[in-house]
Image 1 (cartoon, rainbow, N blue to C red):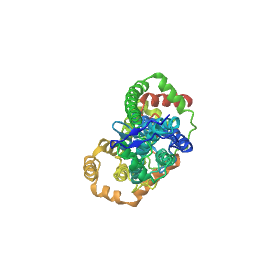
Image 2 (image 1 turned 60 degrees about the horizontal axis):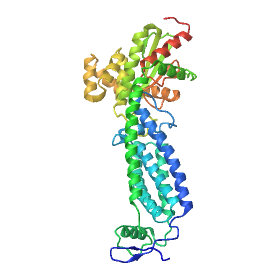
Image 3 (image 1 turned 180 degrees about the vertical axis):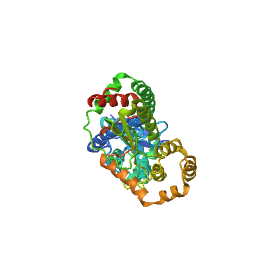
Image 4 (image 1 turned 45 degrees about the horizontal axis):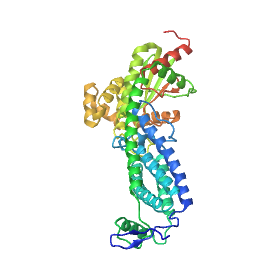
Length: 431
């Protein structure tokens, strides 16, 4: 029986291939890289959503100030078209997974066409990875999960290319493939079949967008409900007390609210330009007002400003350093807490002119205040706070400690109340 033939637009014949067009080992290597990519991308996705949907610290990918994922996944650049960039990465890996399975099942026309679609997707993924890598460089941060995905994207592209059985260079192969798509290249070995791979790829991306959009919406609703529930509060408090207490030091100039001899000590390391720190200010103020003489609250500076904080490589809040010094200068004349309030209240517009206005509003001597701001001794006071924070393990703001234990759910007033009451109970103090 003669073999069936396919004709080009010019009437030339192309005989269907009988030999495999793909190398099995290359496809299995792609499969291994894809599985690793799915794991990393989903991990990064849920870290991003966790940061977005709750007032808490993200966990699991921070080694120190430079090797960390948190600033990356907390930034606006962590989202694209309303869902995490990492979720788009997961969609890419699932697409490549499907295309690779097609190629393993059919190593001829259909499989080779699926691999070619995968190569195009992988080239786009590598280019996007290069763009995201420049953002990491600008931030001065090494994000382990991000870098892991960049490496995996490159590996997938390399293994897909190596899986092709070629007798010509890659450029010539691509040119022949594109010509065959237009049905006007007689020298190419097979007729491409890209409709199914393209449809499946579009389906995966569309499904991923709908799934993660819906997941994020449900997560936001669940988080809002869960933070109000008694069960969630109890669970958070139990988790909190699994930690051992640390020795969190404070300086002789550290201001205190409440009873400095109280059995419950709250110490916060914060940045006056950090939005979350402003939220923490309100939560802690509520606790201090509620518990009064039973608690003490000490505020220490941890400005995310690399002009004064040696632990930072990149600049995050450029006026946080001057604001921290202003707090100390006002404290020198008995107006520390007033300045603390003014700085947070004007957080969105903090700058030299706003600071000058608040100095006047608080009735401070401008000359004396300005001299204090330029005094190296003031800078040393801020840096001593920073060093105490580093010793306590601070790597993000706000960091709130109650009797030496780091509070994860500092944004939840019910959790804070339960922790304070439990500390009082353990100290034998009745309120």
